[in-house]
Image (cartoon, rainbow, N blue to C red; front, side, top):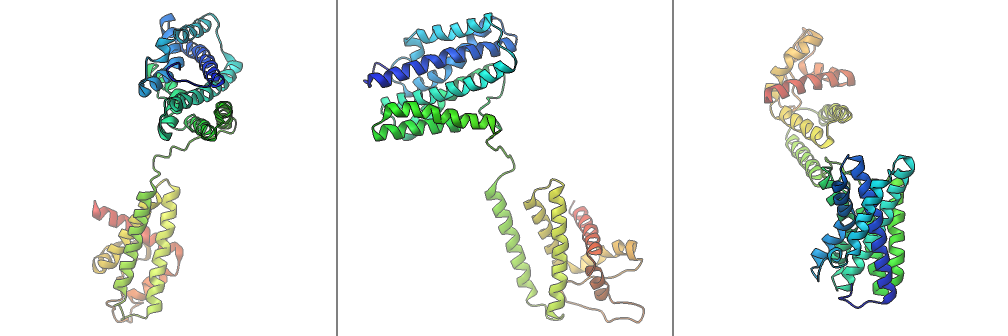
Length: 357
């Protein structure tokens, strides 16, 4: 930090925060190397990655002078000291897990503050200052995890580490703008530590839902609504059947399809996909009434032992014969019963899907 003049108190806070974090992360990194069965070389490398990786990333990106870990050898000494401590002392058990998780939270909080502070000292803009805080806090753990063949813990459904680092950097930046940078260097890590503890104690996780895509879902629903509007527009010209009766039949079919959608959603299918499938089926059913009538005859013959035709569009009707109910009346009887309607829709959907295949 000698390249840029800073208040002695702030520089002292920066320095001690940095070296405390280096020693703690050296011990944690060495302990993780022991758990993976590494030799002393592995201890040194994992300890160095854990304790110095974030600062190296920060200094390389700022690109002002020599990387601190190289120009100030005490950083390397402390990292290797942590590795040696971990080699001679086997830290394990619930107590160590507690110390490790809280130690990680403390170190990440301190380094988020020092990273933002160094970026401020070199006059970087707002977003780069936040990035330097995040990289300093999480960069070492990412490099360590990659070197150990693991997915970095900052990715996926894990305890938040980036969000607390961002909060810490914002506190430091806000304090700097208000002229109280020294207080920001103290308060920022406290905020970061509290947020990290909330993640540990309360089980707070950053959601990682792979299927979540609001734009896609919105587009799918808009498409369904457009198709419904188009179908309703086509129905305006159907005047051969009373409007209320035709509307009742349409509503019964829509209710049956909605029940089917809910069953598929409970079975694990995405709601948008189920709605699109149902809408496409209904559109095709209304447009190809004649073909659907032929498809329905075998299905109804199995349940009722009598054939019938279906005309939901109201374009054509047959005269009632003396032998039994007309196809229209038979259809109305089925639609009046939710269970029969669901069975009818299920049979037709299977035939419709087989036809598309």
